[in-house]
Length: 72
Image 1 (spheres, helix red, strand yellow):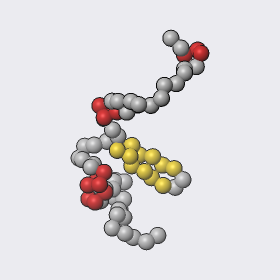
Image 2 (cartoon, helix red, strand yellow):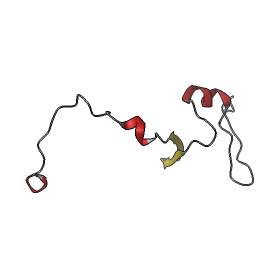
Image 3 (spheres, one colour):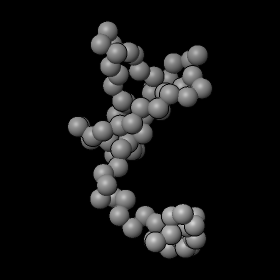
Image 4 (cartoon, one colour):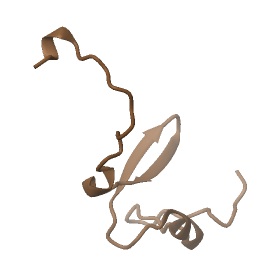
């Protein structure tokens, strides 16, 4: 595995520093929460979006029929 400018080192406390270029690109701020996902030998850090940012995300999606046991 080759080292690159985005390679990080795990501290004795299992902490890592997110490279500045990545923080800028993803607009990650101090205190922001990240979801940690592990799959297939990789680790992904996904910024957690505040609930307010999700408002209206489904606007424009087609309507769908609910299951018979879930209809009002």
